[in-house]
Length: 594
Ligand code: NAP
Image 1 (cartoon, helix red, strand yellow):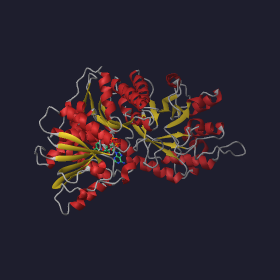
Image 2 (image 1 turned 180 degrees about the horizontal axis):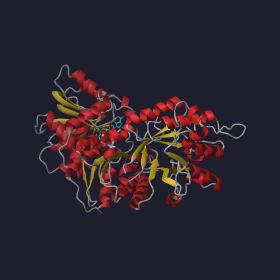
Image 3 (image 1 turned 90 degrees about the vertical axis):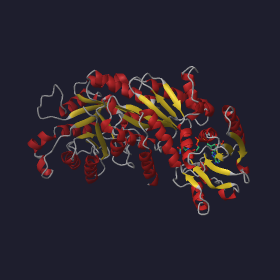
Image 4 (image 1 turned 30 degrees about the horizontal axis):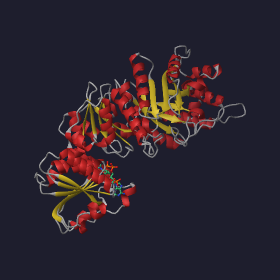
């Protein structure tokens, strides 16, 4: 059975909730969940009767819902705090028996309309029971009385009433992390005869928690268990939401609007359908992703998923954040290593390729060497640079590394210089970090003289030394360090590549002084000005280059071109399909210009 998409609607106001249900249907969802804990107060009249106005409003929502619905009045104990999964609704705190009576009333709604005539009160609508009621396992098992009352409202083998059709979702939630007794809880919920669907959700503390979810879902599917919903919440849990169809999840939750996302890591319906091609995810789907910190802004998922769609490839590409420890580099590496190892080794995830970005490019090489017991050979570029941005995982779980940043710089420079070798050309590389290393190596391999200018001169000196040592046997191409404050004003410069975050939106270096192009006396008239930063599309360096371009025929390469080239090379490596550079370029520019 295909995995359904359900939109949670946090009911505060009946007309708005009804409109949201319509919008959910229009956006392509299959189900809605009316979360009524912020609406139903449990207020009771003198004889203990429920507040009819509230009950009728809920019944109207159910009857008018354009999609099958779940109704949930979540107990505060399992609603989370700080809006983690509650959309700012703190959960129900009022009288428990009023909540149970409401469930009873909802589950038996159609018969109530016939015997008590509520249909007339609700306008011309007949009352209608929800498709599902969601009740927490902990509340359900609190007393025999509660269990009995809930059982009266839902369909199950011992139900004597033939007019009850609402299914019970028995659920358990943990907002701290994976409960130690998760498997036991799941088995107990499964064993409850009244449960139609079993749901577990817990906060993911790392990517590894997603794998626990997948193992439970998959075992359940393979053993023919009841439909199951399994979710890891929070920013590390996105994978569990997107890959639910791969492992047989009954449904996944998605929000209607980005601003209204009820949980970090919860995608919108359109993200799922258009971005992640949710309807085409199946057990055989190969998984790809971008590993870094942070990765929420990455263009990778946009372009690679569109590429898979364009060539009909059975794959999905996800952001895969791995948290860093700002004060402890070794801890950061160990966390990266542990996460990467379990993802790569998982027998059913089918992880097939990763883009690796800041700050893990060097960690990737170390991980690779350690994993292979230092026996596997790296390509020349990766060895020289000591950093890689692409991992391919083959069906036998063996892995290979490449650095497509190098490939991208080589291709773009060759194109800019009309396919010429760069011997007798001088290129200034700004920065000695991962991108600077890749760019400098690419220039050397094309035969250029490379001046590495870096804020920390010692790093530039070290890099120049290492690259010269690695490249020494070649005839042309040599690297030399230069202080940022002492950029060449006399020697000829045929190209400048910015490999620092200077000018990058949201970065501490956004306002840093950009290189004064006009002060570089030796700047060739047709020099190449190459930017790697792509947020914003037009950086201060590119703006300056355009200004100067009024009087000199400068050739400009922007950060998107770099991004697209390195991503297209990854795509080709993973899929064996000629890269879709134009598609990637169009999608990236569209995304960056909004
Ligand atoms: P990295 O390894 O952290 O290196 C950062 C470099 O920038 C270092 O050389 C650092 O100098 C320098 N730097 C940092 N802050 C600075 C400031 N305020 N003023 C001057 N220099 C500063 O990062 P990376 O991986 O090389 O990435 C660098 C940039 O390249 C990023 O902005 C990234 O977006 C871009 N990039 C783009 C693509 C693409 O596909 N378009 C691909 C890769 C990278 P110190 O040595 O003194 O710290």
